[in-house]
Image 1: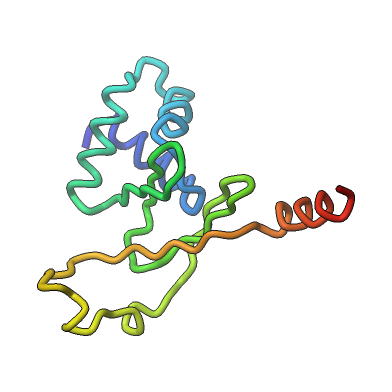
Image 2: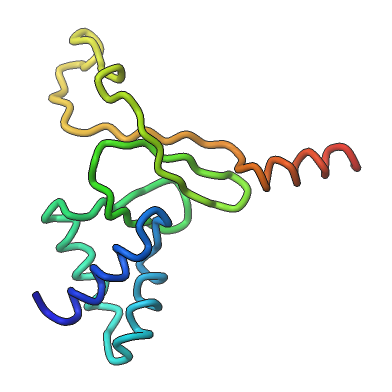
Length: 131
């Protein structure tokens, strides 16, 4: 365990639930380790994903996000501000019947709910009522 990897994991643990981007992780690690490179952060994130200790999330946003929580869960995404929240879901209830798998051997399922957080929903309602 290198000091760089330890610092990156510490940042991920401190940001659990916020789903940071690689750039956000780099910025936070650089605060404690000013000489760390982008390549070290990106390569370490890739290795942690490959090891299964980190999830790389493609949530349909501009950048990949990272989640230290590797247990089964879904995500809520605010279409206004981009906030991402972990939410539990019943993975047993979300299955495909054999006739709907089209011969695929399903190994993963990602559930994403999109909508507006309370602050953005309130702002959206305010804009609609005043315009």
